[in-house]
Image 1 (cartoon, one colour):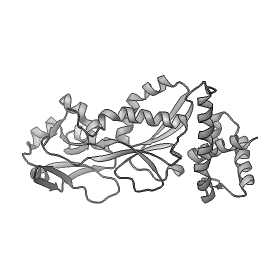
Image 2 (spheres, rainbow, N blue to C red; image 1 turned 45 degrees about the vertical axis):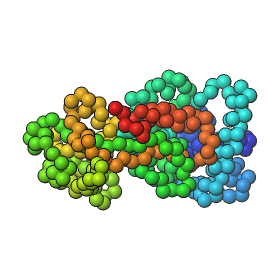
Image 3 (cartoon, rainbow, N blue to C red; image 1 turned 180 degrees about the vertical axis):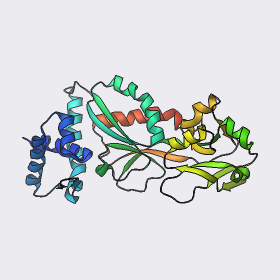
Length: 301
């Protein structure tokens, strides 16, 4: 048993939060994974994981070691690639955290990535809010809005543009609003995560309208809002990439296309060193590729 093998087990346990998950991923027995961690703890004279019967949490010393472990392994992987010894190219599991709406869009494209790299495996975790990436066991995640955590390394993928949409049946029932200030008279479907106000902002030239929608239904999933709008319950404000196809096919109608609605920056983030493991870098490159159209700064005509 050597330190490099132990470091590899350590970074995967840190990413997955589970000895058994690393065992399944690598084909190495769980007792061997445990011995790898014990070797590191003995070598450094510290505890890297706090273990209970129900959970496995990284200690402060474990967090301190993690970026250095990534760096050592990446240097080795880069050397092997340069010297032509890594013939399998991209392999292993990458756990990716994504928002629900983008995750559903990404899933439709994922076959392209897996066809290029047959030895790569991707696990997608979909929800609209994420905590600590290490505790979540994520190698990579996407975040909407500005990044507050200084510990995260972020790559901007583009911006999420929003469209105000409604079904044709809802328009027949409620009529068509002529100005954003008319919207409080219409039933609204609101995406809401974490409470707080959900005002809708519209602006064009020197004119600005801030609307408090008359909410009849709210959800913490943009996909649920999409289905509610499609079911003619009311008007909703949703990501363009989620609704564009429905608008082009006439299943939904875009309102106030001549007004601007503030967009949100969209990032891919990770906690490791700037030089990522090859498998994670490959998934990040694919995120950049698929985002280049739907999240680009200049709207698609």
